[in-house]
Image (cartoon, rainbow, N blue to C red; front, top):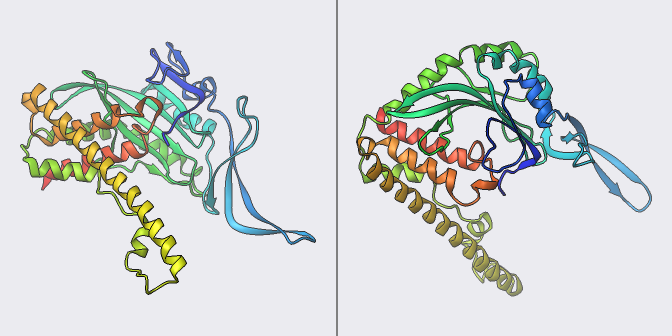
Length: 351
């Protein structure tokens, strides 16, 4: 399911986003002000999960070691909403507290966008980091800050260049910089504020290092085997449904006749599902390969380089069906595909 904007909780500087949702602002504002204006200032809390058992006579409450992340009611969703189930060590951080941490930073890196995803289980913010040339092309530069409240991720920072020529988003982690960019949701998350602020103090260095790494992607010529390697890293082969894998060695002699008949029907259905997955991966790979060929024709100075195939995959993820309703180009499945492709493209240069 695509990651969709939560209601109209999006704020963008000077121009609306692709989804045409939310508000536009012109004057600089602090992150705290942006959070309030965008309506992202709702709180989340962690509550113990209980199991309700009705034995016909009484109801017993059995505590578990799991906790629910609960969003407070908001104007357009007036009930408490369970966002996820997490373990006892997971600790939330409120958007308003994150805003206070970022307020001093926005004096150097102005707020560009802010928004919430789904029912509030993810929030994202981008800060304007200026502009630069990467591989000879003009790029606007941003730092993307995301907080995952679903137990599936951390508070993260990514470097996000945007090609001026076509506005595709090259979400790239700062894995090659000398600083960490991941703040996990532990009980120390509040006490780690000082460390986190120190992280931002190094952002200029991290940005320069990331740009230098990207520039190396245009220094090597690759062949079709290399192209296939990057494509397969971005779009791995489809995996078989687990039930199909587990049942592949079962024969009619192993189970009763009625179970075998049901198993045959299940196998047929699961095989059809698996073949659809295989076809989908092939279609996306072919689309990226076509974009690679187009890029080579349009930019002869960058043709047949790791940069070219990475560009092709980025554009495929930014513009294929579903992008107009999705923020996964910034984080999630589409961003993961870009990151895998970047890592492999980088390996083609470094060996």
